[in-house]
Image 1 (cartoon, rainbow, N blue to C red):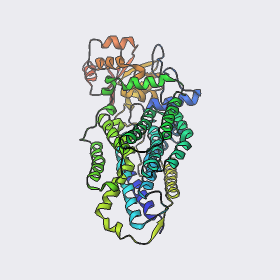
Image 2 (image 1 turned 90 degrees about the vertical axis):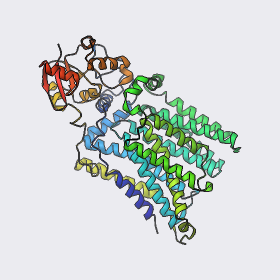
Image 3 (image 1 turned 90 degrees about the horizontal axis):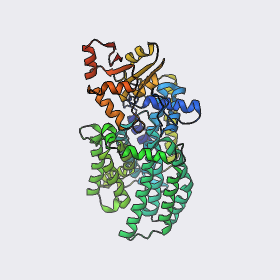
Image 4 (image 1 turned 120 degrees about the vertical axis):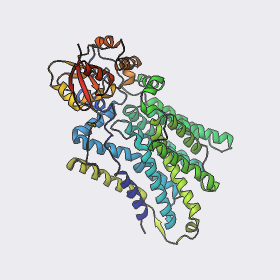
Length: 518
């Protein structure tokens, strides 16, 4: 018997994912300026140092902290249009769960990296891994968007897979020699990964935090539980962390990139302004999935014998720390989903062992050979080819046939068409959520005055916007200082109702209205 059970479970879990809807993944406010940044990099051969998009008297200094990710997304869009970009983002999203950690979890379950296993164990290992991959990827969907953050999740999963394998060798197999050889092999590869990561997306700081968490966990185990770790282990991890941290300075902005990241993270105003940085709510699907994943692990810890879930300080730290971060910030949920996948697979496997223990005791004599790498890689490659082929020739992504691009129910396409048709310069003051849309689709000297690039614009710009939105006496001063020529407003906003009553609307569409500002 070959690996049919494992491959079948992999494909079933992956197939379930393709039934999910993709109609909102291009609705993020920053999609437009991300793609235009990629176009700028492709045209100029370097990332921008000042803002090239907003219509200002003097360009604002800008740290484009995702410039390389923007470039890759634009190249895919330029080659295959929106369906191809959707397919690329879907595959990039699948990579952590089905291209990396599905294999890591399965290797863990089959036990001590043996070359074969019995049919019952293969079946339960396959089902457990497929279930864990499905639920964790479903939770990660909260941040499936057309943005470079998807590169960050993929690279985090690769780093986590490497560190988790090192931990298994060191602690669970108690083979320090093998663990050190494995770590030495990655002392060059992981810094290169961070060099790429620092130019793709700011989430590299979460990767550095993961290395620090592993190091602290092993030091805790050494001193509290008298683990006999060689000093070479802690020294190697510290060296790895230093190297990975140092190479992140090799970016077009140097340490200013790091300062920009921590400025955003330290701003209570911006943390409350953006919904992705809000705390997790349990009335939505992501809250239910979080409870299911966390609850599944907790139940396993309660009912499974200690010798079947040999978790230590690192596993406990992963669960508690990333659960806390996810409860505090919704943006951290995909990272929680990624670190939980192999642990959830273990928990499911242990629960199946308790429930169906007879199947494990009375195992059939038949054993099956394991060649998971070849089968998984081949299956994932087939999925990639199929998705890109459908996108290129049939304008579909899996079973999803569209629509593609920003939603016409959320963005003012009709109002923008009106603005694009007007002569002269149009300096448009609109909600920051439409700034990227105006940047991407604006033509004939139509350009926004603000967008959602928080650290570049600063808190006062957004406070001014809320003053304008609330009909503050400061509104004319704010708009006049920017040289505003047109207002693009939500159709049902108080400001739109005011101008409608005064019969000053130049155009009214299904989503937005245009006002000539004088």
